Length: 548
Ligand code: F6P
Image 1 (cartoon, rainbow, N blue to C red):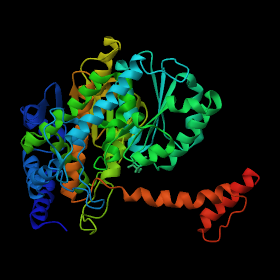
Image 2: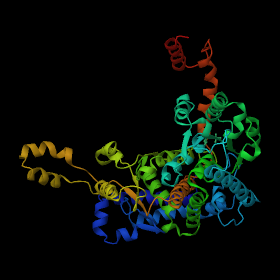
Image 3: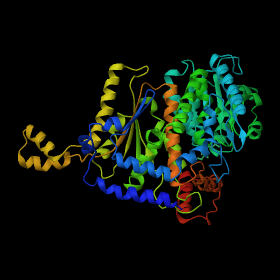
Image 4: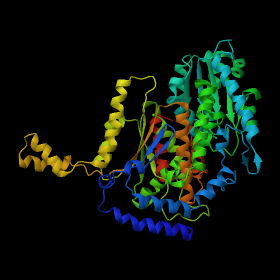
């Protein structure tokens, strides 16, 4: 149920939307020379430009009114105070404590968590440094050269994304690998690339019950036993989890067990010991810098006025499109090859958090909620799906991400990358009009009939919105800032939609059904009478093709 204040703010925005019938983003720029100055926020060396969005000062005011009506500031205060913001699981969500580098008290449900957080971080970082420096040896007394993180969802995407993003910081003698899929090919292909005698496995699972992770962990353990003997397992495995007992049952000793807490959601856990593989790769100081980047944004989120608050603006812009323009998607296009996994990371962050259709009271939500998030690095994306962005019937708002200075890559090539990124956001909003196309074709010597036939295909309607994030370079601190910006964006959206962004019940049904089907797939006789006709038919066909 929406409060009367929220309903009123939504009505005001609905009425305001019609102001944009005949106004394009290009018109907004033409009318207002101050537009860039007024529609960007600088935060340190990071700049958020939202001047190419389809909004004006009145829109921003009305969106901020909506945030106030939804009590964003009160809910933010409750979130940082460790109150239960995840009511369906009865938990706070306090991942900000993991990057609270000052150590000032932070309460989770009335209890200060900081001494536990600091102790566990120190334990994890000391272990990471020992692996990285070579002080910690394998069973055969050699240094580790390969680290394999076994985990899925939040126990995979965060460290995998960050390890790729920060690859220039990864020690050259170490290679980081990530195994997630229950498809045995994932582990098998990884095992081919490692030297088992010099490989450390990290079993990362908040619950330590996840089918995919436990299956892969057992298979990896068996591979170690087969090649190095049972006694080698202790030296080659460690674990990150909230479930100390289950880790012990798996056979991993206390000194190799790195814990976190149920108030850390899986998709927010990169800041915890779930970042162990990353910490081994980039080292303690860089890992702490990554945490500092997250902390920077926590402070900004708490202190900046709403109209200059980057995550609040990000959230409101997406709500403007989602709920008033019916744009169902949001693309994230990093012009930064090393952010190749960032869109996948954001898919879990945003879609698992805000892919909900009932509110906190369990009532159906009357507006639309989470958008479909997708993306690939530019310029590759330009040659794949940008055609639809420019001329398709679907409007896809885009977030562009771009570094000013490249790290460990050719500066001349970087100029081309920058030019392409800026060109795309300009082309999207500007488009190309019929007279412009006609003139161009005429200059090429085409006659009137040829121009009439070709011109419609070459017209770009333009008026397609985007934001650009510009940062100095992709350092650990910058990455921390980017991740935390999106986290808080998702939280603000959830406040306005009045949903629980910290649960994920929607993934449970598929898990349950897979467990029910597994014996039917593996067993000699399939008792398919309780299945729907399609699933039963597919199973029968599977069996006939497999020859069982
Ligand atoms: O996909 C559901 C989910 O629970 C995610 O939220 C989580 O990140 C992932 O599974 C892995 O869970 P775990 O870390 O407990 O293995």
